[in-house]
Amino acid sequence: MRRGTTRMLPNNIQTLLPLLLLHLFLCSHTIQAQPSYSNVTLKANGGDLEVVVYLPKGIKPKEPTYYLSTRFDHGSMIGSIKRTTTNKDGTKKTHVLYDINQWRVPHDPYWAESGVGLASEFGVGDDGGFCTFLCGWDQVNEVTNGVLGYQEAKHGESFLKIGVGELIKGSCNICDSTDDYRFNSPYVYAKTPIWTLQENKEGNAITLTQEASLNQHGYRLQKDISVVDDQLFVKSTLTNLGRDPFATAWYSHHFFTCDGSPVGKGYGVDLDVAGTSGQYEEPAAWFWSTPLQQYASVTPQKDKVTVEMQRGVERDVRIKAEFVKDDTSRGTFTVRGCGNSIKESIPEVGNEGSPVSMYAFNLYIETGTFSPEPQIYMHLYPGEARSWTQHLEFSDLEKEPTSPPLPLSELTQNARNTAASSFSSHPHLVFLASILISASVTMAAHAMWSKRRSTTYSGTISLSSKGYSSIPEVS
Ligand SMILES: *[C@@H]1O[C@H](CO)[C@@H](O)[C@H](O)[C@H]1NC(C)=O
Image (cartoon, rainbow, N blue to C red; front, top):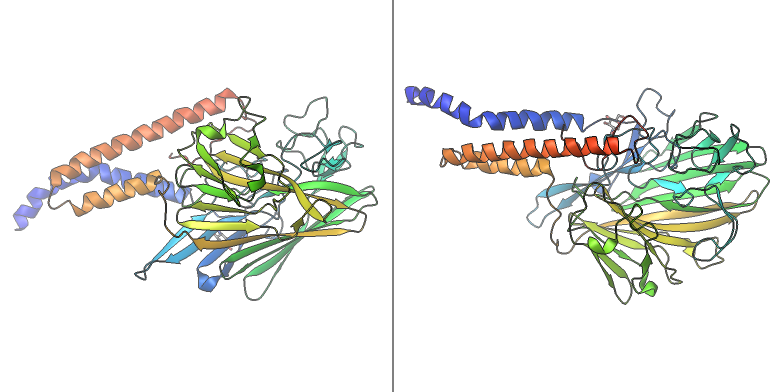
């Protein structure tokens, strides 16, 4: 018996060697993929709902900050949502929604796009400091693109970006002599923004506040973030602390992904834009975006428009659909993926003329994000405040449609488990399977590496020393 075991051993090691290597490979990847950032983790539903609020700089000075750049509101980095569901047989499964490491990987806190989850921006996500005439669905005039005092500032002087702070005009990476405002390029701070945090005793609610003033301009931003049962509430309150009125647009980028799955079949959304009959525009098509029709079905229905992904989105593909004006839309949508359904509504949004109204409704898609983006509009006289609340209701999908493709790590994990369980009966199969797994992992790693290199050198968005890619790196 003992002899038999010893004789078998070298054979086994030989067989298992590729699997061992693969295991080491996956473990090192896992460790790399779990960086820790300054946060408050809110809990509800008996611990079955956990929401991470990545904190602005300065609140926990010893811990690294997730986002330090100048596009998104620093109080809006709300993601890495863990939602545990109970199956009929009593077993539990934890899903991770809106996680980090899906979008703009490797993460760089200074890169303007590197938001997570509900990252939101004052403005419309486009260049230019101001829209003068016929702006948005209601064709309003004089809307700031989230910046205050921009036009009057000279090159090298300060302006305010709402939710970010005081920045220096002309200091961004791609700023040029036109001094046009570049929403997606990091600016130099004139002052360090100061945020305060209040937490409640129950551990399910926090308040973050920041204010900034410059000449006759100023704002205070307050974020009340809470979780209750299977719901998340993000209430934003903006106050005009200046002496001039202003109007601004606002939207949440809504960086949705689930369980680390690249965007593809299984992801879908219902948008409350039935009045558009499914009509949308793609002004950037063939310039930098790819038509939505090539990847998704768009089905107008009686009370909504359903967009269902039909295939995976390649790494360098960006899709942006802008729905035409719909008087009945309140910016409500329901996203689906990985057996979860999340309905977002903003109850304060009303008609043209109400304190907060619709400005536009876009859908943005890459392999690392599935982003429905209702944009809203508000006008504030000096001293006035506006509040609006993102209300997210989580639920289980009735029947899971075709689930998104498994991420690489799970595929290999499953293959490993299968291989291990059939080990005793079919050792030769293990050997074959392990060779196949190792080969495909190597090929995938190689393919990603070469793609990443080409992104870095093509120079389209290579403003940082790193190449940006939207799916997790394997190396
Ligand atoms: C949140 O902060 C705690 C320390 O307070 C840390 O242990 C944890 O890793 C952080 N979570 C994330 C997702 O960064």
